[in-house]
Length: 451
Image 1 (cartoon, helix red, strand yellow):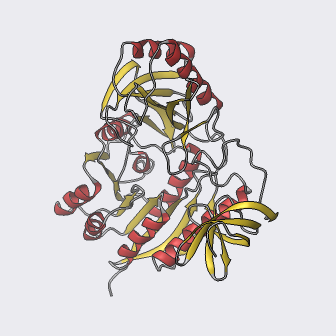
Image 2: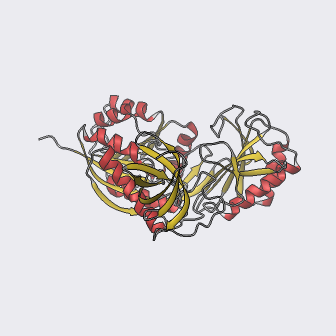
């Protein structure tokens, strides 16, 4: 097999990235935008020692799970990977991804509970981040970066976002043109406006509009005024200044142009305030189910809970009414301030928050001899890191409950905990990001009592 060969291929499974896998002469061939059960004519794009990459030339026999794609930029914008299969098939794939990670990477054999899907598969996102660019005809375009590139694919309406977000983005682009605010050119490192960042409270409907720019200009205040006049649900407009030549969207400096920086919302019945830099799950109803499962695993009644990587405190505070004590740790100062206000506004006097990296916070608590009954972990995609895990083991909690957005790193971290006195008992997958490659999971680990 060599580059540009065309072969017939049956797709038998999917990768964690959403690509189909078929085998030809014993070699795995990875083909994006295929479905299990597809028989395709495949053009080989690249051949390595033990596997190859290909693309669909034509579909000979479609999979029973294949459906008609309903998005004009699917396959180009770098977002969705599952718009060509039924939602039930997507859930089955994601459930298998989680199972494979724990069994193959972690070498673990927990009880796998059925995956919990999302009530909505379109329009579920409460957050939008869109880069801006200038098209060849000089028009301002917004969209998403193409896969593995910084080329902006224009998107008028993303099906994962609300129609209202699309209206706000369109209005901002009109105002940029009218106010003669230039758009950032990454290659030349010139121009002003870089990204549009919107966040909306699922229950409150409040919207914060964040304008990410290389510098502040006088016209920004006019843009903010026009936005709040046109869209009454926009309760605040924030200018985020990012002058650096970087892939990171948000800069360090924030300037409040109008209203307030935080949006108010409700999560699991708890009133919360969320600032632009605070982590907040993008699919609120699905996240409430996720947190409900975490609480069921944690059994918080009368317990002392440490919530590491706590963000704005939403996970820990969802259990605070039953817990004896709740201590959260988070490295983002704005999120810690949000968490403190969220506890105060909800009347929780048993909750406190520490601004520190999770590993250092865990070490500090262990050094003080504090002994939690339950540790909650909600790490970023890279996982916890051994320092954090060692500190958790040192504190010797009865239970550790992990929420993870990356089954691979979750299984790695759980393997470490399994080797250091904890039984990995139950795992449940949750789909908070329908149509994308991402899947979350909740894991229950219990201390193994020494005989």
